[in-house]
Every structure is written in structure tokens, then in C-alpha cells.
Image (cartoon, rainbow, N blue to C red):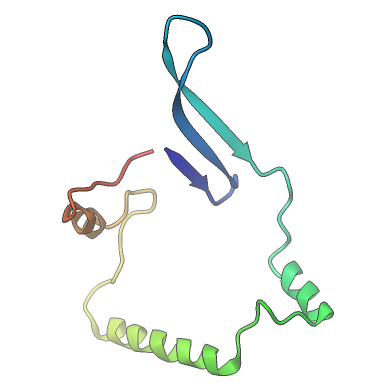
Length: 113
């Protein structure tokens, strides 16, 4: 199982079953855990560095931004006239029940970590 951690402890873990050294053949769980030791740049540090260097790779063109907002604005408008909250579920929970229903259609289930 591969687990990817996003915040606050960025890194990844890989849990596998491996052969223990020696004889007879014995298998045991092995966990490979990686923690990022580097400090991530502050929120705008990378952006400002790119501005100074003239690198526009991470920047979107104005027409692209406007098209994205047009798309999102339609969703926001629909939510504003719908009853209730669109995605309300308790913090720390497994998320909306619809997520489990969605993947259950393919005979799958979310794995609790």
C-alpha cells in the first residue's frame, strides 16, 4: 500500500510484504517511510522568484483565467439557489457518503488508513 502525505508532514510510506533473511521462508510486513527533510518555500516565494527571473511557466494567460472563472461561476450560481450546503460533512470524517456509493458501483471500497 502506498500512502502519500500532503500536509503537515509531507512524505510517503510504502507497506509491502517481504521475505525475512535466512531459512525457512518467512514473510513479514516491511514499511518504507520517507519524510521530506527540506523546508518548502513560503507561499509566494517560488512565484516571486519566477517573476524576478521572467519565467512565465507557472502563470496563466488572462483569457484562460477568465474562462476558468466563467466555468466556476456557473457552479457557484447553481449552488446559491439550491437548498442546503452542497458538500457538508464533518471534518475528520471519511467524507460524503456519496463517495462510497460512487466506487461501490465497481465493487470497490475506500481503504481506511
